[in-house]
Image (tube, rainbow, N blue to C red; front, side, top):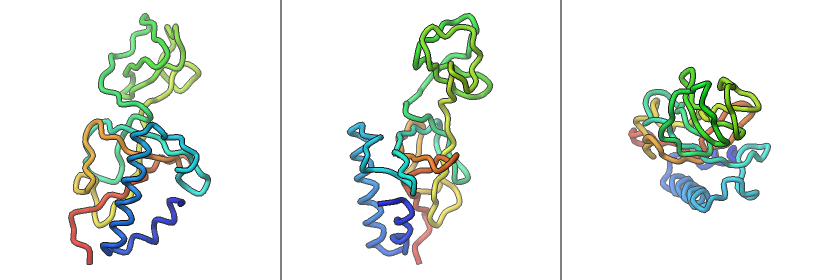
Length: 168
C-alpha cells in the first residue's frame, strides 16, 4: 500500500481510525524486528524504504520534529579537532549532531562530506484536527522511535497524529 492511498481512510469514522491504527501497529511490529529496509514496506510513490528516526526532544508547536535518523542518540561531546573519531562516533558542532563515517577521523571539521554526516533530520508530520504535535496522539517524547520515509528532499512520518478535538 502506498502512503497516498491512506488518504482514503481519513474520513473521521471509527472504521477509518481502526484501519489507520492497524497500519501503525503493523509498521511498529516490523520496525521492532529491525526490518526498516524490508522490501514489502515502503513509503511514497517511488517506493522509498522505511527508516527509523528517534526524536531529539519532545514534540512542541508546529507539524515538524527534529529526529536522529537510524540511531537513538542520547549524548555527545563537542567536536575537538585533536580527537580521533571512529566510524559511528558522534559529536556536536554548530548546533548539530554529527556521525563519523570513517575510522581514524582526525582534524576533519564536521560537515556533510566523506568524513561526516549530519545525524539530524527534520520530519514533517500529518496532523489531523490539530495544529501542534504537542497536542496530538501518539505522543512524541525524547527518544521516541517513529517510522519515516524520504519524499524527495523531505523526511515524512509514516504515522498520522490525531488532535484532541472531536471528530465531526
